[in-house]
Image 1: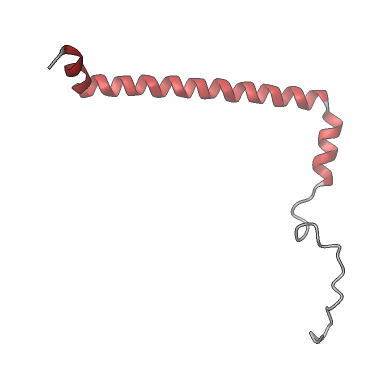
Image 2 (image 1 turned 90 degrees about the vertical axis):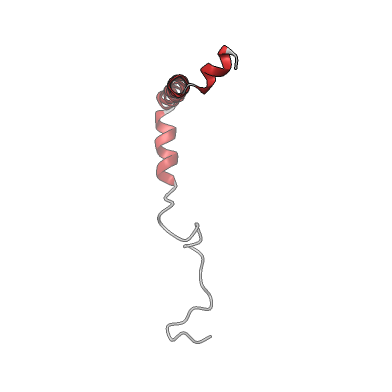
Length: 81
């Protein structure tokens, strides 16, 4: 077995390499998330009034898919049609 093959079979080396890779990936993900947060904060600062109004206009919890204002022509109090 060559020296590189023996190193690849070493569990301590393998665990350390995987740990370093995981740390690098985590740091890269955190940097990307921070950049996204910064972009969103800048967008909110640029248009604060329009963002708050648009979110308040849309009340997704208040009805059945926006159809709560439609008239039910067949509804009766007795349940007959």
